[in-house]
Length: 365
Image 1 (cartoon, rainbow, N blue to C red):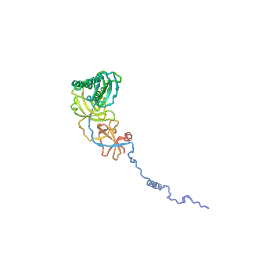
Image 2: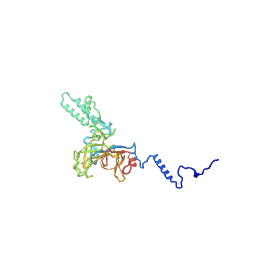
Image 3: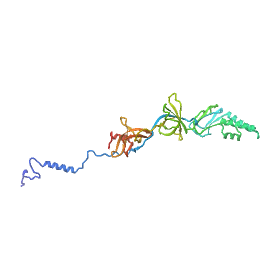
Image 4: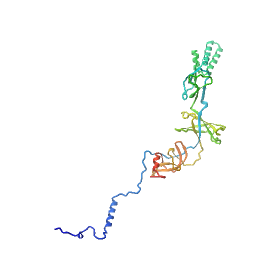
C-alpha cells in the first residue's frame, strides 16, 4: 500500500509561512542578473555626418576682390578702321559679288565685279597713248602717266595696269577691291543692278578694334579721365571681361540724357565682342572697406526667409553648419564676404537643397 503523506508535512526549499518574505528577494535577484546580460544603450546616440556623394565643397579662402562701379555701354565700330566703298564709275550691271556680310577679306581682295563702259574707255586711252608714243617723245610719256593715274583713281590696281600695258587688251570688267583687312559689314548692290557713281558697293571694318560708348553723370568726370583703365564685361553668358582704356571724355553734355558721353578703345583680338551689343563698363573704385574678408563661390550663397545671405560650411567635429554672412562684393563667380569662418572650413557648392532640408536653424551633428 502507498502511504499518503499530508502536504503540510512535505519539506519545501523556502520557508513556508503566511507572509512569504522571500518573494521580494527573488525579484531583486532576477533584476540584477538581467541587467548584467544586456549592454547599456544611451538615450541619444551620436550621429555621423551624412555621407552624400552629391555634396561638393571648396575651401574658404582669405582674400578680397576689387570693387567696381558699373555703367552701361554700347559697342560701335571704330570709324578709323571702317571703310565705305562707293562706285567711282558708272556700270551697266553688277556682274558678280564675291563676298557677303560676315565674310573676312584681305586688303586688295576683289569683292565685286562690274561691267563698266567708262572703265573700258579709260583703258582704251592708255592703249592709244602706247600706240602713238615715239621712242623719244617726252610728251607721250606725260600723257601715259596721266592715263595711268586716271585708272588708279578709278580703282585699278598696279597689277591690272601692268597687265593692260603688257597685253594691250582693254576690258569693260571693273574689279572693286577691299581697301583694308577686315570683315564685310554691308553690301549695297545686288548682281544685275545698274550702278551710278557714288553708289555704296560695300562696307568693311576691322573688328579687332572697336569702340564702346558710355555715359557718366555730371560730377563723375573727375573720377573717369582720359587714359583711365576700365574693364568691359559681357552681360550674357559666358561672362568675359577684358581691360580697356578711356580714349575720350566729351566736353559737353548729351541733350537727351543730360549725361556726359565717354569713348573707350576696345581691343578685340579674339572677336569676343560684336558691334551694337550692350556691355557693362566696370570703373574701379577706391578701396575703403575693412576686413577680414573671405572668398566663396557665388553659387554657394543662398538666403533665408528674412533675406539674410547664408552659406553651408563643412568643418570640424560638428559636421555641417549654417553661417550667416555679409556680402561685400561680387566678382563674377566669386564673392567677397564676412562671416564666422574657422581654419579648415569648406563651403558647400553642390547639394545645397538636400542639406538645407536636413539642417536646423543653426547646426546639426
